[in-house]
Length: 192
Image (cartoon, rainbow, N blue to C red; front, top):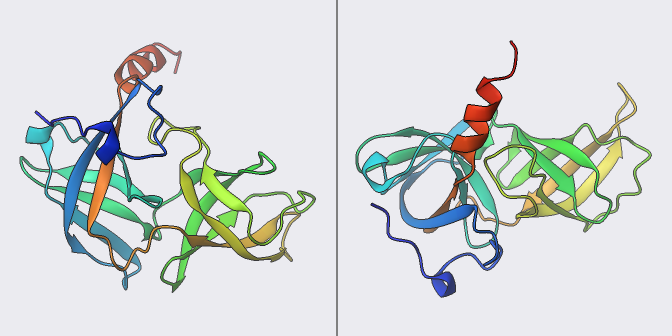
């Protein structure tokens, strides 16, 4: 089983009081960031308790979500992946949006669905929104470096510079939401 990372070695930003999350450390053994669909391979797998859809973060910010596991390894869908869509929030204003990647720049992703009346500004911090059971709310993602009004609808087009340098990831932390199983069981009872 995964040994729990002692808190000193753990993420400063997963607070000690968040009992519902466990944090495990893994080394990055392969990492792509120049493709349209990028993945990392890490040296922890199902034998260590790693499961699909667990969140993965670096010491600086979020990195991606576990996609597949074998006994000793796992692949992680990077935030630099055109299929990635994460629920995030503008920390200062509390407005939510969806984080996607247009493939143009490594480490610069796009924040969509934020209404163009929100008083955002360059330098605003983007954090996880906590709407899924993947990441706790409030983990660092990046900061706004450019925004303009969309010509198509009443939202902003926002560029976010990731805090994690996706081109030089050495080790990462895997976050397990220990409440997820209970929540999923409950949600299965909802009428279809």
